[in-house]
Length: 133
Image 1 (tube, one colour):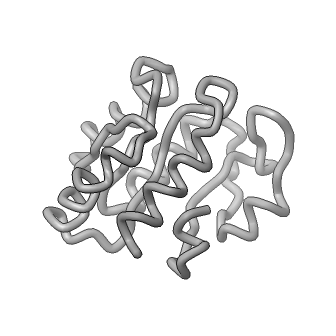
Image 2 (spheres, helix red, strand yellow; image 1 turned 30 degrees about the horizontal axis):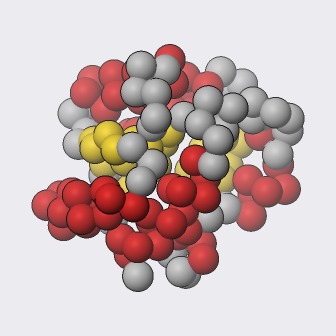
């Protein structure tokens, strides 16, 4: 949301059927440039998003969640830089430094599900806007 608000191209891969934890979200996800993976397994879209990016920003309140651990695992397996932050504007300088250090063109943004971390989408959007504006 934050990237789109400030005119940065968004994209990536969603599970088959544009499945989310709540329901199918094809219209909303397509608006963000996400394509549909052949598999409905979240692991497959995680791998593709990690491989297709220069680095990953993990925004997580629960850094031990299955999804966060899986994302970090694939970043390490494919030797992709990653940064794990809490969903707080206090992290803006840290994220800016990370982006500058690795001279990123494509940043994968991953994080906890909304059900695990209330308000994470809007907090992540605010961080992204503050970093790239």
